[in-house]
Image (cartoon, rainbow, N blue to C red; front, side, top):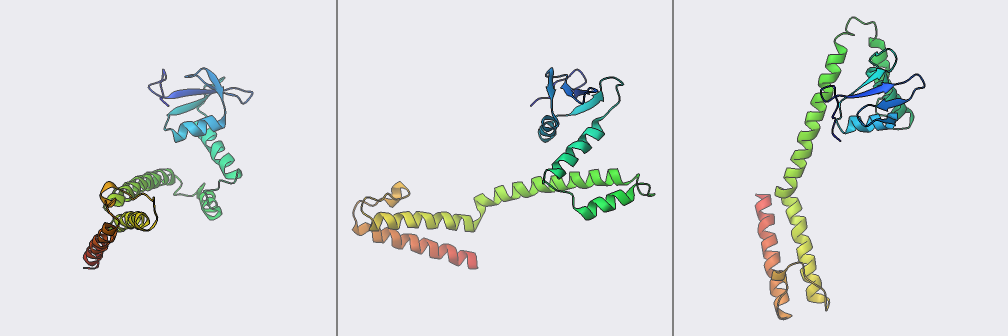
Length: 184
């Protein structure tokens, strides 16, 4: 979802006295669920009071969090909430927003790095390759012992039934080599 707006890419949402939210970019009324999805889609928006022009974005985002928490999708532990409340009026209150924002950004960066590492490791993971090879061996065995069964690839479809055992022996030898390499 693109955020094309007259305000430099920021979508303006107007909140009316009747509690309705109006997306000026799409010229339609929306709900808090729509705003939550916009956040997930990284659409930058600003919620403004239609009458006074006051910025209500913080209050609306807090309202979305409260509704998510009340709906059973609790992410904020009770102890964290207690500690957060205790910070109001504390001399460290001014430092907390920046700290929380930096912590969340660091968390998201680490999450992206972890996701990429997992995706990259699947291709070079010896255990994943071993599992794939085991499936190939199983298919070859099924082709050898079950009439009409298909093997996993063309090279595993021997011309004669006597060759099936030779193929399996070769595959077992290859597996043993790989296991020996992994243990060294």
